Length: 612
Image (cartoon, rainbow, N blue to C red; front, top):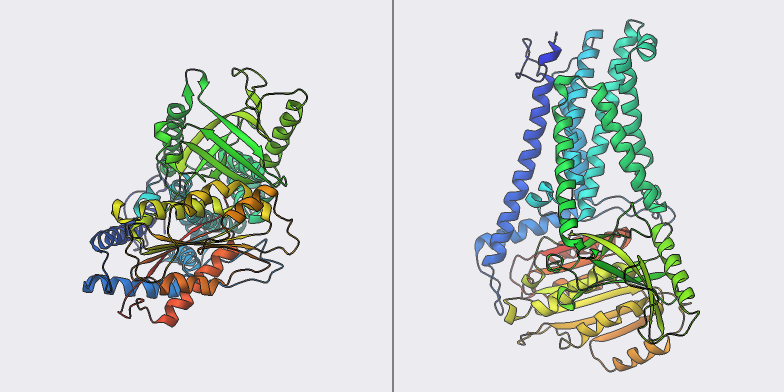
C-alpha cells in the first residue's frame, strides 16, 4: 500500500480498498455528529413532551407517547445510573463513574480502536508506517472535540445535548483526551517500529527535528492527561493545576504545529479558532459587564465565617446582564489585587431578585486560603482605631477597602465576574415534586434550586410543583450561619409539606438538616435564637448525630409524585453515587409506576459537583 502523503486527506479509499487516513478522520466527525444529532432529537422530544404534559388530579396525561417515553427513560435510568462503590480508603482519591458514563467512555475508546484497525493489515514494515500515519490522522481529528468540550461561552456540545453542567462536560473532555493519548501512543509506537526495522531509530531521534518534535508532543500529552489531571493533583492545588494545564496545552499545540505536515494542520487551525472564538466571546462579555466609569464596576465584600473554614463573598447590585442567572449556576471570580492571573468558579447562592450575588466558599489550600488570610489581615488592621458602624477605612478609589458593620469586619476587594455558566437543562417549576439533597457547601446550589421551585413553581407562575423538600447534611452547627438568610426566605414562603393533594397556589415545603458530627460545637447565641424561632415549625427539623437514609429520602420523593419527580443532588462524588444508585433501585423495585398506580413515570436527576 502506497500513499501520496500530500493527498492523504483527500479521497476515500486507496486502490486496494483500504480507507485513506483523512477519510477516517472525516468519518470520525460523522459519528460524533450523529451522536450529537441523536442527543438533540432526544432533547427536543423531552422538551415537547414536557410542554404537552398538564397538571391533573389523579391521572397523568393519558398520551400513549408519554407513557412509552416515560417507561423508556425509566428503564434507561435503571441501567445507567448505578455505579460501583470503592473501599473507603481509596474513595477520596478515586471514584468510578456511573455505568452510563463509563459505558460511553468505553464505547469511545472502542470506536477509536475500530477506526485504527479497520482494514489495517499490519504485517510488514510498510504496514507499520501506514498504521503510524492512520493513527496520526485519528489523533489530529480529535483536537476540535477536546477544545469544544473545554469551552464555556460558545459550547455547541452543551447546546445540542443540554448538558450545561461543567461536571459532565469535563468528564468527557478528560476521556476524549485519553483517546488522544491512545492514538498518539499508537502513532509513536508504529513509527518507531518502522524506523527500527531499518535501524534508523537512533538516527531519527538524533538528527531529525520532526521526529524529536513528535516525541516531545507525545510527552506533553502524557504529562497533561496522565500525571497532572488526575483527581488528587487537581484537588491538591487548583491554581497550580490550572496554570500547568494552560501552559502545557499551549506548548503542545506549538510543538504539534511544528511536527505535523502542512497538509494535515486543518484540525489544528479549527481547534485554535474554536478556542480563540470562545476566549474573545468571554472577554467581550467580561468587558461589557465589568467595566464602569471608575474602571472596575464591582467590589466583593469578603467575610471569614465563624470557625474560619468558610468565606462569604457578596457582590452588590450586579449589572442587568448578570441578573439573569438560573439556580445552580456559577460564575468565575478574579480578584486582581489578590490573585490577578487566576479565576475561580463559585456557585451563586442568592437569587436574582435579591439584587446581589452571594457566595459561600469552603476554605481550602491555595487561593481560598490566601483570600481568607488577606481578608483577616485587613480586618485586624481595621480594628486598630474605633469606627462607626459603616465607616470606610480608606477611600473608594483604592483597590482594597475595609469597613466594620455591627459585629463583623468585612474586607472589600475589586473583582471581575465572568459568567454565569452551568445549571440544569430543565426548568424546576415544571416538575410535580422537587427534592434537593446536599452536603456541606453543596447547599450553595441546592438552596437556590429549592427556593426557585418554591417561588416559581406555583400556579400563578404557570408551574406544576406541589411539594419541595430539602435534605442538608453538615458536620457542624457553625456551617449553617452563612445560609440563615436563604433558609428564612424559604421557610417564610411556603406551607408545610404534605404528600396528599395540595390545592394551594404555593408548593409545600419540608426541610431536614442533619448534623453528623458528634463533636459539633454548640450553636452560637445567634444560631440558638434562629433555631428556637423555627422550633415549632412542623416542616423544619434539625437532626443531630445521624445521617439521613438516602433510600428513604429518594423513595419519598418519587413515591409521592403524581407527575414527574426531580432530584437535585449537590455535593461530592459519594453522595451523588448514593442518590443515583437509590433512584435506580427504587425505579426497578417499583416497576416504573406512578404514585396513583397508573403505569409510566420517571425521575429527573441533576447533579452538581464541587467546583472549588
